[in-house]
Image (cartoon, rainbow, N blue to C red; front, side):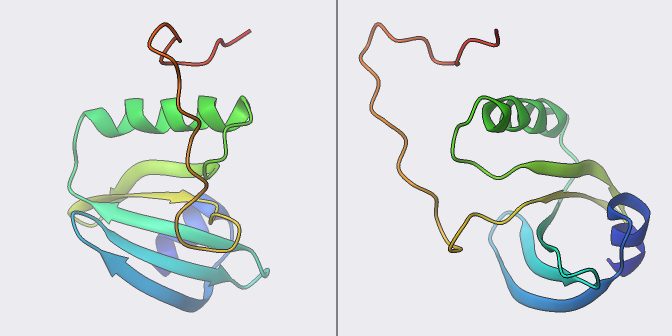
Length: 109
């Protein structure tokens, strides 16, 4: 995990702040430069790249979700991805309820 962070985030791990998970193993990490990141480790799945792309586009559009920082990239026999933690930890704010006629994805331009 430390080598992965050095290679893909440019800094080693100083401290693990939490570990959780169900389908993924999720680690809260503080890097030696003081940056906090969330590292998710899971089985390889072809959809992960697309999910990361959508999450990044949502973050760019201002949706309250974590910023994707790296991955999914190999970590041993699994793949890992890193993202910013949500402010205050835990779950983010509830998304707005969209009327039935609203588009599912936000416009990109």
